Image (cartoon, rainbow, N blue to C red; front, side, top):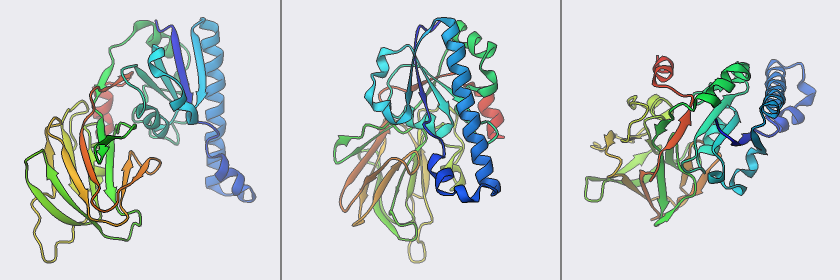
Length: 294
């Protein structure tokens, strides 16, 4: 049984969108988001009531304060929200196990969620009592000019120009002494096994095993009118990693989506390799993953 749990929840889901477009309350999408918000708040209330009855020591914090607590001081971290909430928390924890609860399964994919809002009750208590073996998911350690970034990417990293219509220019190198190529296109994806079903797959990448320790890259929409490229995509050993040198005056590095972005200007050097320790995910199984892949 876990005795000291940190619950990190999405704070005020879609609050600004609902507030700013309150005059459109008859709009179907606004109505749907209002239902999502209500389901999320109800999930939190139900979870607090259940855990209070168990006597388990729990701490609830909003997502915005995730960097202000020491994750290693807890025996389990629980996220309440969707995949975005789970990814944001996964960026900043070490070896502490994590469990995702999808608070709105009708709206959110909940790929990493071991439970959803309807499982708060016996399924959750059984999971906490049996201490299931966590699934180990590889993460990416990104460094810019030799400085490791604090966020560990669980899904992917994207190098691109901040303006979607602009050309991305860079030099990519595989490993320390591997092949090198200058490229021009819409950027390049770098992904883990768990991220291989996401954006990189839509860009032409391959689905890898969920717990794979390899790294995959795919260049997006290469400008190939006058040039043939040899490093369009590939899968490499995580220990080798890859590096990308920016040839853009204004480039960007995005970690697991648009919420974590770093400037990546001219001659900046990005190095990507496996993180020193994987993410320990509770409640996620390979069987569930295979079903989602189909």
